[in-house]
Length: 111
Length: 114
Picture 1 (cartoon, rainbow over the protein chains, first blue to last red):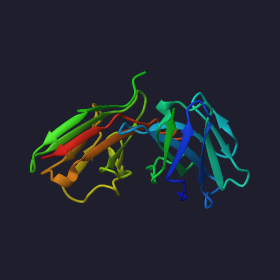
Picture 2: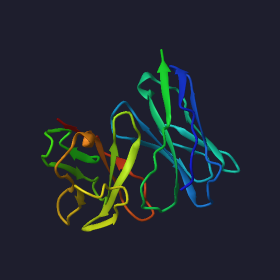
Picture 3: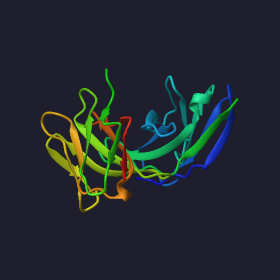
Picture 4: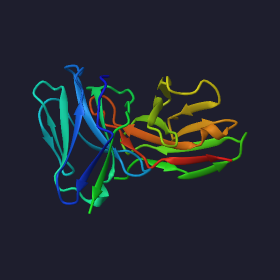
């Protein structure tokens, strides 16, 4: 699975959009981009995933560049409860193997 | 639809005792994964199981650790003769299998070894 690079930390004002970047320049054609988050010491929470098209669900939007070398997770209206560590993970489609968690981005949403 | 369930949520053991951690996957999920998170560190994969089979145990310590996922009942992660370094949060995830491969995590078991 390809390696990902994320900034270690970011701040966001409550009510504003949080844009979390991820670089995955060695991604292969059959690899998906997954996003999870971990709030404090809870279990990781699945957010969204995509292959090459932009995706949106009730939690977030995922924007993947045309060359697929980077992506951005967008939380449209961040709340204090969105404060968490966000993990960007690249993984082959249909793969039943393990997820490889990096250090992620610590997002702090401030009032 | 209940999510992934883990119990106990907190477990305290003295050095040398055994720890048994249980994981019940989401309904309809036949694949289970165990991860460990040491204090102030990221999650590390331990083992991947399907019913009655260990598929990948490349992340499991060679000694004292074992896992099973029987035909009936929850998946069990067993740690024999625990040491202080085993103190960590242990998370279980499950997935439906085949093409639908998103993993969903449980709340974790926090093991403290005294």
